[in-house]
Image 1 (cartoon, rainbow, N blue to C red):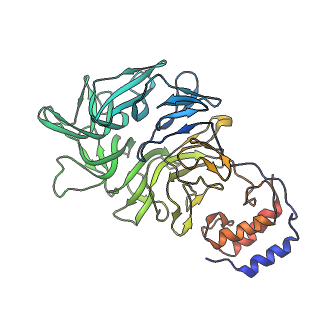
Image 2: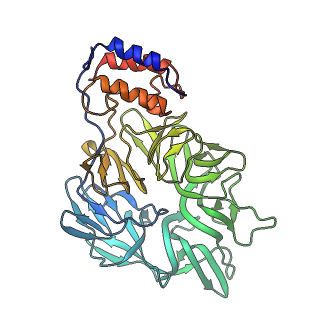
Image 3: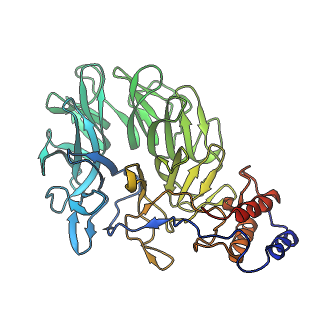
Length: 445
């Protein structure tokens, strides 16, 4: 919807000057740099997490070679809020998966070190300051590591580009470390897995007990009955099945959270739901039904995170998208329960990974990817968004309320940007002009 220019100019005239009544200093909000550079891996890996190794929670990142200042940290680095440090001495390796898992001895950090050319992986566990091998080499590139208990105790599961022979049969897509060797699923001598491209794997209780969920691009269980259903696969400890109504493609990331209505499974990507629209960026599964969240994305949602910026937990999606529906929502979007909202200061150039961290003054949304600069301000390769809610009417984010905020509001309104939706009804109407004027008159805290 286009702005009513006469109404906008009348509001500007009524404002009475460059610095308007009620104007005040705005709270400083936005992205800040953490003095780190990173060469990201590909787009389908989730390798940023918060882990406590006994010294307190810290942010761990594995997304290519990391450097902080002039120091080269290697493929895995730790940020404790003050400084970056290397995590063990791994040399020049490709870390294809990083997870915190509890295999019966408490939460520990596990990594898959992979040889892409040879298509093999070795799993390592962090023991103090050293990485120790855990189990034999795996034929295939492990892109996700999960601990799952099928009733016989927690075991390590790996999924990704896995395809190897076992007792004259094939294990595909996913394998588990059992009795010191990698194996598939089913009865003795009957090992199998899933076809398709597995991008992510999580444990989710859909009401029938915890199960292992696998998602990606056109996934289906090996030896599935005809006609073959394609979608997300579910392993309950006894058999594989396709999750009813699940997207067949393309799921990039999954997230299990308690969203106030119990445990729910959120999936992100660029998906088509059998009962919904095409091009969905995110959807929710409660164990009974799928719900598409919002309108179509113009590119994949690569990473999902729940984060509380101070007004309640919310779902965030990150990727290289620039539009959602008819609105410009660049790189990172916040789901408010009715629509996707842009951040007040977009991260230009896209984001590959995001993770929320709620530790006191370190609370924020952390990202990998995007530009190294916002405007002329350097933010590095792992920036942090502090999550604070800025003065709503300070739309040009200059720290003061002036006529230029009115001009910015008019520009956002004319371009269909939801940052101009000041009455919060999900639409851009003339009532948003009145709501903006009210916010401006109220000034800043």
